Length: 140
Length: 248
Image: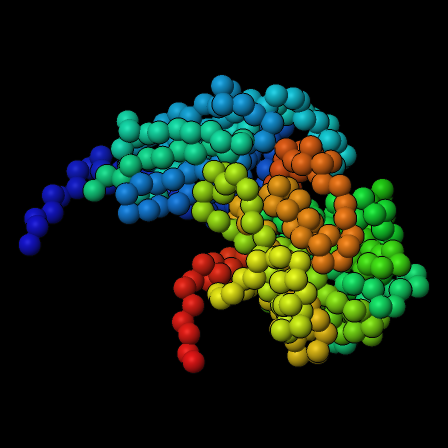
């Protein structure tokens, strides 16, 4: 039988905050629904999908009106990424059919939490037809 | 027709038309295709669905309230579109009401437009389309037009109930499905399904404009896609990926 290392205080604190963050993401969205756009930082949240396979985590993000050169993918911790992309045109809220407030956007922005341990330094990024693909090999 | 679901007619309904359904589903293929069809053919609203089973939601257009499920028409086509995903638990009564109503208008055929998700969709150079039918005769209509048949598998959602109920009612029905993204709006797949619809009905629309507006549609349809994902998950849409078990 394998002997399990006792978790350190910092592991416990990390895990606590990770759980808390997950809780806020999951329940915060369902309790107080918020729009998919943010006037404060002039950004729109893109649609995204996370698939966990036995060997990797594949994240795809739908980024219409963008090009590969404007896409930024930055690890913000060992289990989360921040993604942003500048659109090649400004989108006004009324272009999207929202007429009760004014504002315009030119950026996609989102924060993605990765559900299993991955090798961030081995991240591979591809961009096809406006779809961003992020491949992250899993840590076993 | 269920008393909880009413179809209110605003104008004279043509008899003997083809009833087409474009409801939110994978890749929003059906809704995108139906919206383009409505624009290109300049269809007018002839009826709408009113139901206490639906969430308390209206769609505002130019400041006026509309049902999220409306029927547009010309002399040959009745097109039922939903601008919001159907809640999983009301699909049966809503589809039953629409099918009963279609039968009362002597529709000659019912066709549902939808998609079938594929892995690595972004790598696909060409999208294939498939058909499933309510009867061997309806299946032959698709085969005669060289549309590949979806031979085996599971189908989940409004289009599944349409086929089953149409089969029970003896009304010829087809579901046309184009390969698509599951969770991203897919205007290219919508264009593909419209090409197949043209082969069946003879109603051909130019899809160039639809493809041109592809990125705009992807941007605008994000929120409806997200809501649709939630409903698809409730109705166990993922079962369509399952390998079928055959008992013969």
